[in-house]
Image (tube, rainbow, N blue to C red; front, side, top):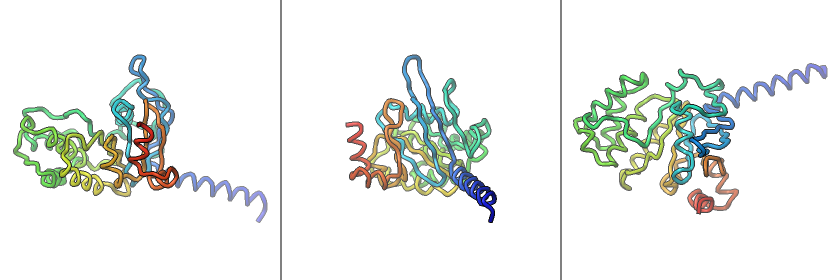
Length: 253
């Protein structure tokens, strides 16, 4: 083989390797910034999200987790940096592939739980009514119950059921365990893990690190709008000689 041919083959192999890596990446964020007045809510966040993984977006309240999620979901304007989805700049059509669960209620108090399903069905083409019904049953919610009668924990489970009933590629769950009692949390976490598939990615923001330690593949620690530390949970535990909850306490303690 001639030297020129060998060099060309090496370049081709490198290109294929790069394409292979990019195919695995569902979302790529570069140098994201967002200000609210003089407050810098997000500062130079750069991260990649691979398909088939569950990520823990960890940090105390006010650290920028929600702002980053809203930026990724297309709910915040006036930010800097770049977001790529499946290898191309995030577009309006891509946002339909992203299911965002807010910390705020998304339904009207006069609605019944069944109405919430119809509301989601009208807004999202990927909403699966059959799966929604299965999730309601698993979370011990009745379609005939009215939204205004729900406790904070039941309302949280309803938001999660509606979000996970979508066939999305990216699920952004903002504090999904807030308000849910300890007994129900096991069911909720199991449901989240069962939603994970080879073609989708789940990001959970939380400060309840002890609860999700065993279910996340990667941890992203955020402080004051920027990433303090990120990586595979097993590797982080090995490198620092401590569990993810202990690492959380070390970073924010």
